[in-house]
Image (cartoon, rainbow, N blue to C red; front, top):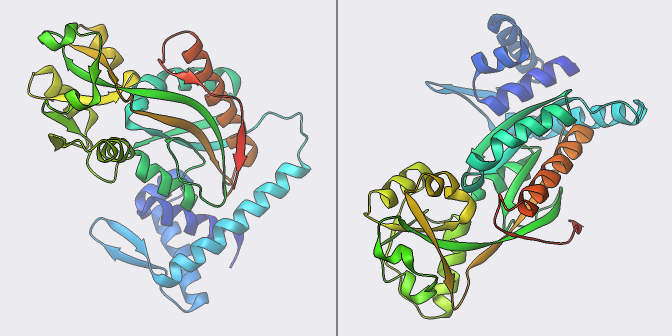
Length: 313
């Protein structure tokens, strides 16, 4: 067993596909398959289960994956310690963005990363916050932007902003002229929300339960689909202001503040301490935090900045 085989094995385990792993590693697929076959023969156990969509790790393969990730991370950390601290961070950093923020944040993030960290390759992953939480804990993401994240081991975070959730309605609706709407009144209308266990859904349901409010809700886990349902006048939605900035700019939606009580959540920049490119990941996290702070100060992102306070588990 050598480090090259471990690197190949980890890449296949994370992509779930030999062909995609070969593309990322820039080697021929037959050569990659032969390396894994040799590794399985040396260890005497199968590492992957093959199926129509690709591969998944066996129980033994998952155990090796956990060890291999730690080994490769320690080697990367050792290189970082020995490398000059004045050198620019390098490496590939995977950044998870929640669906409600990805559209508005991805383009400026790519731009500022190219300017400030030219040697870092940014890979953006869009998903619901619950899935991003799991990915960052498993070490499959280096950095993530999470709403009301869970306090997991092996992650560090900085609480960035607090966002109020708002009621989105079609721009032509008579309701769009209101200056505010009560939380109770908002859920007298047909509202579409992401399904459980989405963080936004949990925040809303817990608040409704505390105030003994029955909600008229339909489930939809697609942000573009939610936007379409609202713009077509079939439903209303509860989301942060940043989620539908484009639709409001086009005059398709209006956002009404919800009061009595005001639903809100906290957004944090989270860094996995299992990352294989620690300096690059930490630098990318700082760039993203700075960008979010600037967007809030400029009014592009309607939210309240929190103190630059970091917490570690």
